[in-house]
Image 1 (cartoon, rainbow, N blue to C red):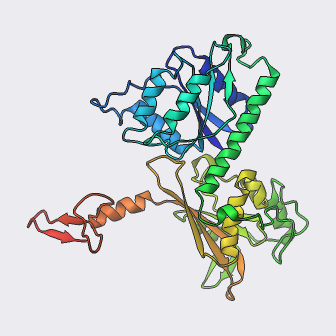
Image 2: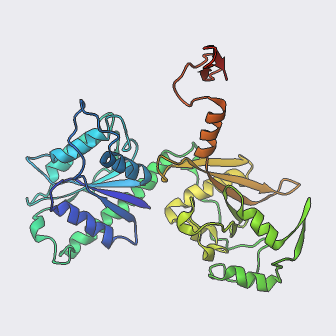
Image 3: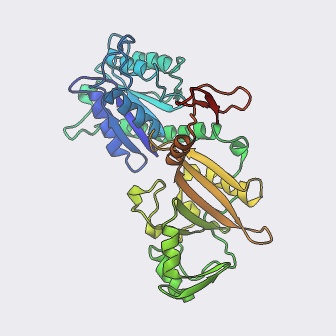
Length: 395
């Protein structure tokens, strides 16, 4: 799970920055947290719109890509700093990255009460129209007398404080999952886990005698089955290709492909990119894993729901947009049911694509627009003007 932590102060030294750094480092096995400063964000001025400036767009993109946000606020004059207020105003003026985004509030202050009053004000601000963040209730983390709280290495001195903070972080992770379920397709929230995601059973094609979790599962399974490779020919339904040709063919596909069988075992992906370059990261050693070992536990309900839709024939394809790649991409995960000639469920073909280049090309070729323009009220098509005659042409 990827989070961003926003420092609520533009001071050169900030204990709230130190608090977020501690959270990011100490709990890195739980979550991936990127700490963001607001020093370069200009003060909000509606008459001088800087929404498209680099500092504001940087924050916008990072928040959109994240699963959740942690805001660390100090307390100035019983409220939040003007710099933090200004940032939220920019992020609710023409852009709205916090809309529907799970947010956790923490804070550090010299006062023994921590930042209790500023946190209360921040909750009210984040609930305002135009912001519409989904703030986690309760679990206030109020770090008082902050100038005494950290050791020289930047770690919290008090073990009980660290333990309570860990409890808050874990609850926030669960809170994000709850928000995701509430936003999920109708029926998903009521689904009990009915899928054996650990693939403890077997099917006719399960390769026996090989540990599913072995990093070299492919090599062991190939040896156990005498699998062919190289320039050995394979007869397909309508074609004959060598194994090498099949690999080249599948790796050339304009999508990332993944195959999981009906026993919920991950058997294949087209290995054409390094993991860090993929839209949906895969690692070579994951092939052979049960699906439970390819997903975090908080995603099990979602995974089971998708499989159930396909296994039971409720859907042939389940599509979902994953917005964590930034505004320059529109990444779609499509889960396609694989069936034999009799319609029996054999597994899932997941293909992942950035469809934005396809949409851009289509709009360029047809002259249509996604928004704006002179829209035909009957057909809904967007019109373009013939630049020679001046006539309006319906697409």
